[in-house]
Length: 531
Image (tube, rainbow, N blue to C red; front, side, top):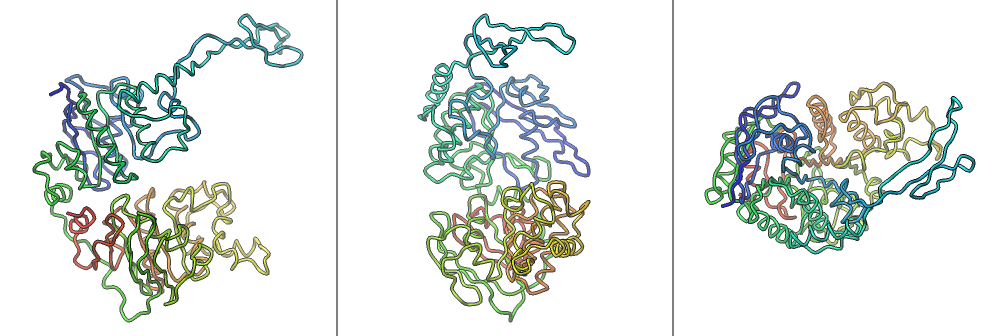
């Protein structure tokens, strides 16, 4: 067995009003794949950031092979042999594979001397090039600049050698933007391995991969383990762990709840480690009965992501959609809204089939969507709060096709009052608001269309606790008005707190449907994981 060990002892990380890690002591061994699991908020990301040098602990220590480390930055962590591949890839799409692998470390050769000719102000180059210009005091000074030339052949040869050492084959001169997600993931790992790390942490590496791509990634991970790399593997996909991990460590509420060899890690044992004896929290009560069905989906499919989805939504009902990353939650909402073209099935509004659904057509039929990516899909950052608050409902706000700012102001100021949006003024850029207030502007924007069905995709991501509570109140208020809601969240506790019913997506299919009355968090998570 390769010799090597990464350990933490008593790691604690305090943030204002919360403790992210509370005395975490854990060890990861070389030559093994150690799975790190836990529900959202358990402390996994904080632990990885500390080990990667991105966050400094309040107290506690990190040791590598018995030596205590002081990790003050990611650069220092890399220097100590610790690398991380995060769920959000850090590649630059317009650069080549080779440039991304060696980013910031491209080999150089020779020197290039440049100077600005005093009269023409043109750049001239040459090994001994020099010019002088007069500064503001009338003194003469050099205007020569010296730079290093990138050794492109050496760079691409080095990148190809790194890929070859890992048993991989990619065109190092190809732009990353032209690669599949799986290939980009491989480039990210090759980039990390170019530092010759002793520790490699992988955060949800398979969340966007197809089954055959997962197999290829697992082969690479196993080969790294055989080389003696310490591998920390973070995943919500329980069924993957038996295929790749040697042991499982679970975090719960910032503490280590247990570690077990993979042979003992049954799905129920893992869920018990993650959740303990959680009890059912407060529920919104029974779903409304005797009301009309406003939205129905029959046999909806989207490529190989969604398969034969059928559901019905009544007026005033809040229906939660649960599932792990990659289960098809976002694709379901986008397909219903017409932003993704379904490959099969039907969508019915008020009992009538919608032919060739598009966002414009679905909006006219009374559907609204607060999308998952607020920054890229929900707002226009350069526009004002007033403009952002009127985008979706502009046809209703404009009079005879003319946009009147006074009408916009009245509408958005109404949103500000009703949704409790804290703003210094609606003419300010929307980026001047906090994440929670931006999200309320997005919701208000769609409420201005007077929808009958509102779809929320991760509406509380990246906002504070107070704003979360306010958004929950908004959704409950819509339900009382008879507006039906579809609600996607990775925070399963939120679904239990807000929704009347929950459907569980697993591998693109509806696996289970539950009323939230009496449904425990543990049971819901087991359903998502297929335990």
